[in-house]
Length: 135
Image (cartoon, rainbow, N blue to C red; front, top):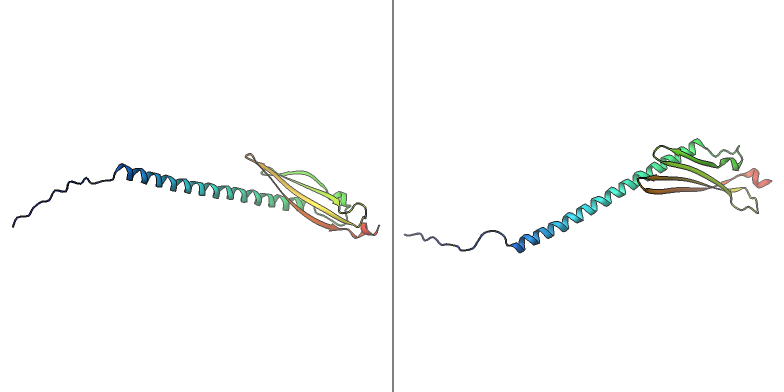
């Protein structure tokens, strides 16, 4: 019995079109992956800035408490700087200047400027002063 060897005349490997398609698919996949990673890093940076702003806001409130023994005008705080480029301020305004009902609006603001990214965060609260309302 003789074994015949068949010659297959096909070339093994990939064609140029298949290689180009594989490179295109790989390029699109890598671009999507890098874009997603970049956005994740930006979100993490923003979260860190807001956490630092919250820290500076709390520190400013601790250093400058709103005490009932003080006059409302004494509650204002000019720009106070903290580590990391954070600046804390507090503004006080009477809710209704005409009625003098003793209700004040306190706006505490933290601003920052890091690596060209400027931001701010504000907290607004109302404070009622009973003695002011009775005057």
